[in-house]
Image (cartoon, rainbow, N blue to C red; front, side, top):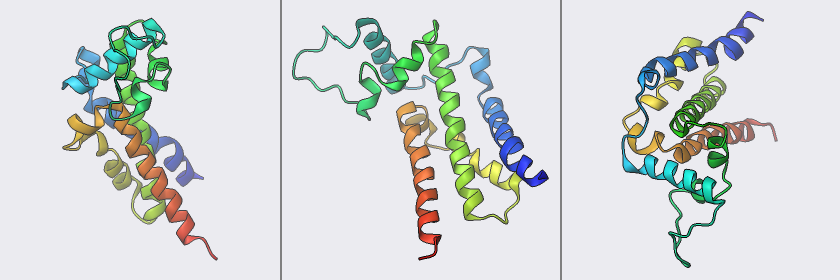
Length: 167
C-alpha cells in the first residue's frame, strides 16, 4: 500500500515540483518565448480565435501548416485552451507546464514498467530531465512537439506490454 501511494501520488507531485522549481522564472514574469516559432504559434491561435478561422491576411491556396496541422487549425485544442484565459501568455505558459508534466509522467510510467527494480527517486529524476534537456528550446518549448514526447513514451509502453504478453 505504501509503495502504491509513493508511485501514484508522491512521485507525480515530486515531478511537478521539480518542473515548477526549474521554471521558477515563469512566476517572476518570464515566458517560454525563446524563439520566434513559439510566439508565432501563439499569435496564430489568438488570431484564429478572434476571427473564427477566417483569415483575410492569408490568401487562397496558401498552406499554413507549422509542425503539426493541429497547431494552426482554428479549433485546435491549443486555441480552445487559450480561450479560457484573458491573459494569453499565462494560458500559453500554463499549457506548457501541464504538457511538460504529462510528458514527464508518461516517461516515468514507461521507466517504471521497463525497470521495476530501480528506486523511485532515480526514476523521478530521470523522468524530470525532459524539460531540462539540451533540445528544450527547439523541441520542448513548442507545445505541439511535446505531444510527440508523450506519444513516444505511451507508444513504447504499449509496445512493451504487447511484446511481453504471453502468446
